[in-house]
Length: 293
Image (cartoon, rainbow, N blue to C red; front, side):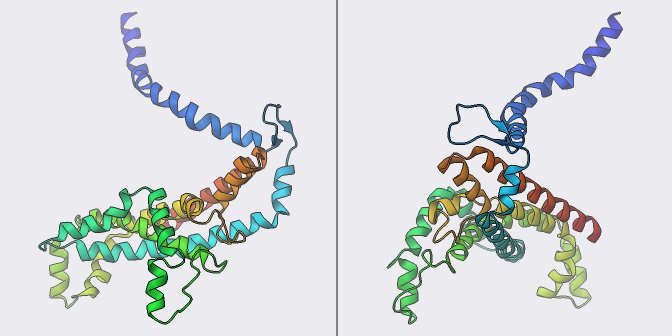
């Protein structure tokens, strides 16, 4: 009898250790996600004291004919296409540059990483000042002949690209550190052997570094894709989706529907579409990674 009890306790012990984390995970993540999934099939808006009414796929039918939703979706995909390739390639080059034993190299690594520890709200406000009329960037381009400056955040054609630049600036140091960790795991003997075979300079990185860094490249591709798809703080601080919704992304549109117009059910439907979009990108990245390996 005692032996059976010991066996049961031994089996239950791991779950007892997991229980606190699972309990808070359920309250903070799983239950809200299930509630959001349910609300996306209901009408729950304006008067949030009333119980939601089941409407089936009405919210998704509304999404299908909502031109602003499709505009924000296109702009989110544009954000993804514009940001991810740069954040996959450029940090690798920076990591290669700072992966050297030189005097003062720690200062360079710190300088690259500093934007990561700055709050996005602070970074957004600082860049908004830089982009402002008669700000530093305006004065800089005026020096090169642009007498009226450039409407960085007030032009429908430029606003989203100006916000993209902040996302790239903020993420460079983070992804550089990931690549730097991978580079320091590559044996120097491989580079010495490559040099003996005539592969030197940047060519050795194409022959040695890039093939061995594939797992890190795909990791950065996945993380940066998810971050670009869910971008919000930059848009909220710098443009509020303007001008004329030209910099609005799908997460900002979701926020606006939920908290500006109190259309919670419609916002939940947008959130479900966003979840499926992120899931699709994640599966695609994993399949590409497995195929190339």
